[in-house]
Image (tube, rainbow, N blue to C red):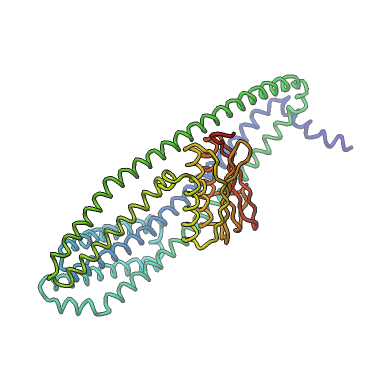
Amino acid sequence: MSMRLRDRPVAVLTWLRDRGLVMPLAALVAALMLFVSEGGYQRTRGSLDAAIEAAQARLTLHRLLGLVTQAESAKRGYLLSSRREYLQPYIEAVRDIESQIAVLQQRMGSSGMHGDPALSAIEQELIERLRMKMDEMSEVLLRFDRQDVRGAMDLVLTDIGLRNMEQIRALADQLIEHSNQRIAARTAEMYDAMLFLRLGILALVIASLLALGLYVRQSRAMAAQRAEQQRVVQAERDLLEIEVRRRTADLLDLSWHLQHAREDERSRLARELHDELGALLTAAKLDAARIRPKLADAPPEVHERLKHLTQTLNSGIALKRRIIEDLRPSSLSNLGLLPALEILGSEFAERSGLAVHMKLTPGIGLDAGAQLTAYRMVQEALTNIAKYAQAGTVEIGLALDGPMALLTVQDDGIGFDAAQASGRSAHGLTGMRYRVESEGGMFEIDAAPGRGTRLSAWLPRRDPA
């Protein structure tokens, strides 16, 4: 009995095949799937269009608020300084406000919000408030231009503009909130449409599986052919593995080239900043120093300005030095890897307040490229520790490990799951790996949530003996 029940679906499928009904049935299923797909597409498209219109209306409201703020700031700047250049942002903002009002009305209509009388009333009140705000600012500027400074300031000091601006923000927030609700509703509709489409696809899959059952029992004769195909696939897979290894080697070579090109460009920029910008800033500081004795009888505000100028130049020179040091660490070029790492660790300890322990073995021979790779790895690792690790102690180590030099950076922070790392920190770790491997070394991450992180890099020594 159970055998007959199990064979009944096969018998039905065989009956359909023998009477030539398989293709018509498949065509019917395809037509139904097309209908389901098209219906889901139209529903999704309608919901998406409505959500886009609501989002654009929300964006227009944000732009209007920004333009009003720009106009208010430009007006106050003009009243405080009497400089005509402050009027240009005001004029542009007023012009753009009118155009954005028209855009808002069009967006509100396209998104269907005009169908709600309450929303239409809020929109009209917002537009009226915006124009009242523009009229108030225009009246202030008109009085100011007529030399009626007191009248302009009296109008500014009233709370009319403040109340009007608060009302504008409140009305805009109401429209923005409704736009958010419409976006959420349309998003829910899109999910419903996609669910409907998934159900249709599921039905097609089931129908396809039923059709496939017609041929399952006839597949034994094709076993040899499948075996041959598997052999061909395996051969192609082996060739693909070889190609992947070759491409990986090419990528490592490219990474090595790009890293060195980047460091060369950094060195060039550092030299130009030192030679050109440094000379300009130093000359400006010397000129300021020469001017100071000649202004002994000048008003105090002149001396204050000159002092501020000197401080600004000193800040510029310090900034130039920091940029140059970041582009190309002078300590590495002038002192070598170990002093450079010690300086890097001590500066990091001062900035972060963390305890940094250095265990550096002298006399490890690394070429210039490997030294720069080691320095950049420690630099990137310390940056990640400061951002993400929440550590209290950091240990930097450099030791011999046979023909290789072993560089380690370890912290006692919160750790992470290396297999699921993502975001900028993961990009930084990937960059370390490629940099180390492009120098012929190996890179390893030992991390887990709650037990800190240890980064290890093995770099080939210049003279293993």
